[in-house]
Image (cartoon, rainbow, N blue to C red):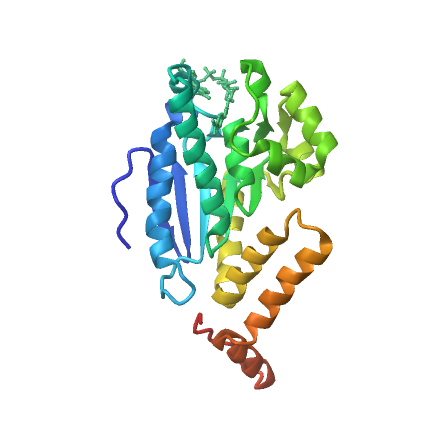
Length: 270
Ligand code: DAK
C-alpha cells in the first residue's frame, strides 16, 4: 500500500492495523490546516482500498499523536490568529468534512490518547469510534479561554457521549479533566497505565475485529452512527434495513455455514 508523502503524518501498517501518527510534536500536534489536508489525503487512499471486498489487509486505524506529550492540543492557535472569516469558513468546512469521513469509513478508528487532547484534539478523538487513553492523558474543550466555542463538532459529540449537563459544564468552564474522570463520565472507553499497553490493546482490538466479517463490521458501524440521535422508531428502522441486508451477503452465508459445521469462518467480505 503506497501513501503519498505526508508533511504532518507518519503512517505505518502493523498487522491488520494502520497506525497514523500526527507528527508536529513541537506544536503539541496542533491541527494546522496541513494536518487536516493530510488526513483527508490519507482517507482518500484508505477509502479507495478499505472496501469490505477490497482485499486490503487493513481492518482498522489507530490515530495518535507524536512526542508523548499531546494527542492534539487543539486547532493551531498561531495559524488561526491570521485567519479572516473566509479562511475560517474554509477551515471549518474541511474539518467538519474530516470528522464525517472518519465516521463513514467502513473500518473502526481508535483514538489512542497519551497527553493533551484539547479543543479540536478532543473533538478529533470523539469523531473516532472510541477512545483509549493513558492515565497521563487529559481532555478538555478550552475554547472559552480564547473567546471561541467548540468548532470541530464538540457541541454535538461531547453531549452524545457524556450527556448535555456534563458537556455544558466542561465547555462553559473550559476545565481540563484527567483520564480517570473522562472514563467515569463516558468520554474515554478504556484507561491504560502506559502508552505501550494502550497501543498493544488497540492493535489487539483491531486483530479481534479482523477475524470477523468485514461487511458486518462496516454495516454495524454505519447503522450505529445513523441511529445516533434518531427517535427510537427511526433508529430501529435503520437497524431493520441493515439486519435484512445482511441476509443477502456471502459473509452471512459463510458465518452461519461455518457455525453449523463447527468450523472457523473464512469471510469473503461480500
Ligand atoms: N496551537 C499552536 N501551538 C500550540 C498549541 C496550539 N493549540 N498548543 C501548544 N502549542 C505550542 C506552544 O505555543 C509552544 O510553542 P513554542 O512556544 O515552544 O514555540 C509549544 O506548543 C509547547 O506548548 P507550551 O509551552 O504551552 O507547553 P505546556 O506543557 O506548558 O502546555 C498546553 C501545554 C497544551 C496545556 C498548552 O500549550 C495549551 O494550553 N495549549 C493551547 C490549548 C488550547 O487552548 N487548545 C484549544 C485551541 S482552540 C474550528 C475547528 C476547530 C476549532 C476551532 C474552529 N472550525 C471548524 C472553524 C478548534 C479550536 C481549538 O482547538
